[in-house]
Length: 199
Image 1 (tube, one colour):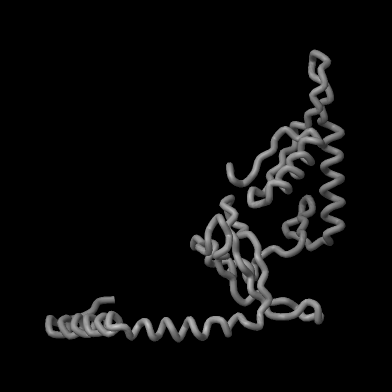
Image 2 (cartoon, one colour):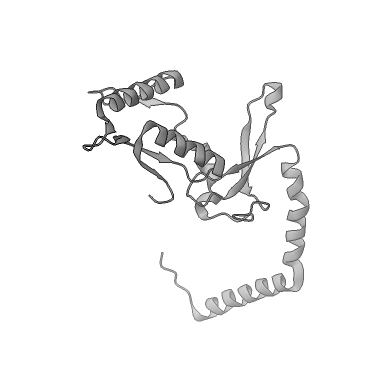
């Protein structure tokens, strides 16, 4: 866009900018902020507050989800607002740009909400049930472990290794969950175990 701005028009525009800034500096901006602070609690007064962890990176920032709809009455809960948790020790209420856009992530029409499976030779994914997905994962893991499990090394010492399958865990979990996940992976003999913080 090419603006044809004369020197006189530029000075008028600059003067208007200075005047607007001066009005804000005199305290009129605080009145607007006070009004917004007064109205804000009413916006969330009838919502359900749920604390959670941001799903993006390994920092594990705390977030608060506000939803309308009472599940106890059979209503569908609809998330209307997400913000940083000021009581969380990691982020103390602040969020990065990705975390600040979490509502768009939750409401995205392309967000995957159920298991999908693409059969061999097919060009499209088909929806399957959670039971079908868990059964398929368990069957494939069992078949691979049976075929590739190493109980002992060449010297005859027990090693109990399953080196053809790896596991990627979430780092935004509690110490107890991380411990249980690690024990699960190692009890199967999985050697390749990591989490998203290092990827």
